[in-house]
Length: 128
Image (cartoon, rainbow, N blue to C red; front, side):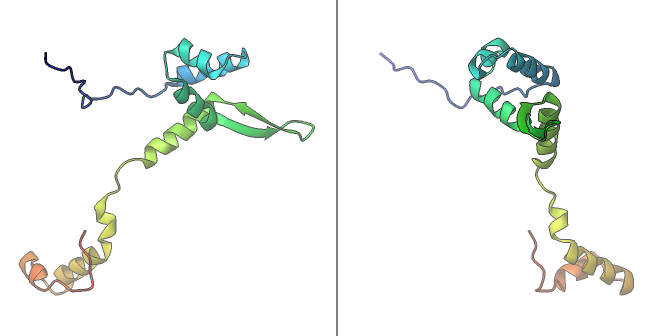
């Protein structure tokens, strides 16, 4: 008999929370549901709901200057969008600007061509 192996290399199908789901989380929290009950309602993992509530919870002062915490779906969406904007790979061109400026000056001022640039490459520059 051949043993069954589960393939763990299949592509996972993660789905980000939508603004509508964040609003629903807020409404369900207002009804007093637990993280697990909200997760069951939305068809998500409880840790996804817990992380989202942590992400979107802010501390505010009421009119009596008493601090209280509350989940706001707009805050969760804003933090999500900010994090997504920062998660992309950084461009390498920013790491070689010193060399690019040197090469541009040599080509412009001294009419160097790319072959000469490569042969006269200065030792002070790091290429990534």
